[in-house]
Image 1: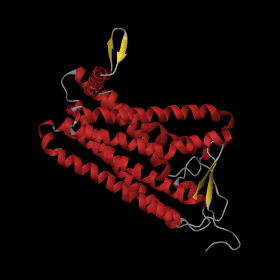
Image 2 (image 1 turned 180 degrees about the vertical axis):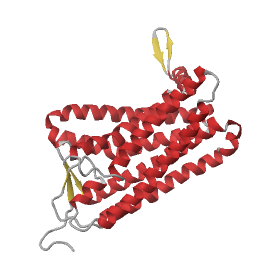
Image 3 (image 1 turned 90 degrees about the vertical axis):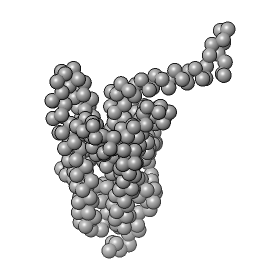
Image 4 (image 1 turned 30 degrees about the vertical axis):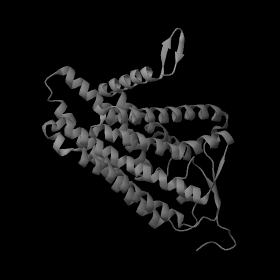
Length: 323
């Protein structure tokens, strides 16, 4: 029941980092640089994997989808964040806020499923190399990727629908830099108990289960690595997997702290900092860690660069001409 004589909210005001007004220019430059590097790096990964036939294995198919996903995921949040920092506050309509919320949950859930699939792929490659081609055939890889995307689509629908059905009577100021679940429920003037419980259960089902499956895969991977007779081979493999696990843990850890164990006792500013990790930082770190620590991928990058240089430029008599 809406309170009498109170009009419904038609738009929200994103407060962003209002307590850091003197730092807005620096924050704008930092987030713009991270966003540029994220989009550029992921586009390069997609282009290299698409052009090099040697990188058409399941591992790189997963990586290509992860890179595309990270571009979409960070583009849902960062452009509005940059506009907020530039204008010292950003208004967003109710439909646009619900759309941002849906795509945020959709891409976030899809990433959880995809990271779990990638951990399973690494488990098969390291722990069952003789059966890998059978257990992770191109057809199975395609199905796993499709399942990740389709499950993400369904996961994003329920929370955004339930939030959109809540009553918002004012105030309309969201103390965050994007339309997130906790601050929106705090603004609602209707009961959010059922909505909060559904989101809590859904968060456990997606975040905790995917994180558990990822950890189980890495436990088996690490146990297999420890049995490698060569010390150098053991250290090299462990270093790569350790980097993957570190970034995955940062992503899941910050997400779980926000949605499975809400930090109601923490200040909104601390929650914003936590949110920066999974909305801005990990979209840059994930593909970088998965690609730049891979010698095969770096060789493919050099090959593509040499090919492009050979096609588009040649020095003839002191001038550059396009062939």
